[in-house]
Length: 359
Figure 1 (spheres, rainbow, N blue to C red):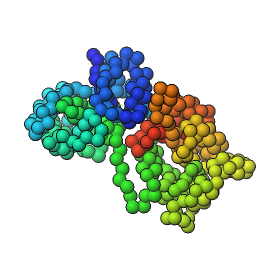
Figure 2: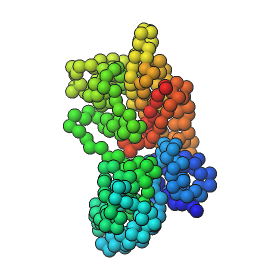
Figure 3: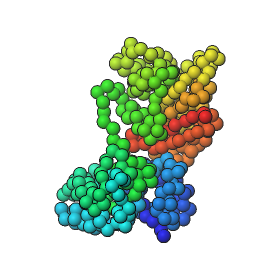
Figure 4: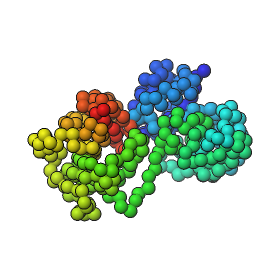
């Protein structure tokens, strides 16, 4: 039986997200865009089969999806909550919930056009509160917004609401729309820290509590600060100055030149080979150039260490296809790093983040 999914991606990479999902199902039928970065697809597979296939090989550009099991017409009136409750109560999968299987409700209100003020007379919280109470009363299941095993997704777009209940692990992300919103901290030096924090969560890794790290293109020092805070010794490589708050911190060495020159210096001393637990790069350069640079740093990386790099991509045009350029850069990275994961994160902009291991 065919199944419908609502997919979220960056609006810049919507075409790429559609294309990579089609690789999992050649018969996939593209649906309409409901809003920038929000679109429907129609798979020939049963929804749980298709979701399982995609989850085994997570896509780069599709951040989140869920099966659409009902579509509710909205009047944009308070009575919409009653209609949503009626639809959820009728979901066949609801009967599978039990007290020992915690759930969460994720609700989003989306205007079809960007920059338009919300026209809904209720909030996402009001939807979540109403539907969570309904589910608990009907099934005895407990709401757990931090670690849900099942997620009820409700996305209201214009005069329609798309509703689906599915296991959290089949949604690609446990965050609504894959939007991992992180709060700015007082000690934060730059926005880039949010990218690193999200990447570590998505790839399921922790920064080592000791060892050496090389931060390529470090200025003003956001990633350097996080590496230091974890307990690492950090070489911050950048001709530009670092944030004054980093001055004098133990374990920090600023190499005020370019990453290529630092590499020459380190390779000249064979004792430096394999001495770095982390190599991090957020350089503003062409994706292929960044990939070649990170490959050239592979001899410095410890066998059990990892590298993390962003790949900057152009805006899509008739001549430029960012997804193609990204795949070319990833092919370069495979020359030195057999184990690769790549995602277009919520805190990325016109780029993707790649996690790399040698073993």
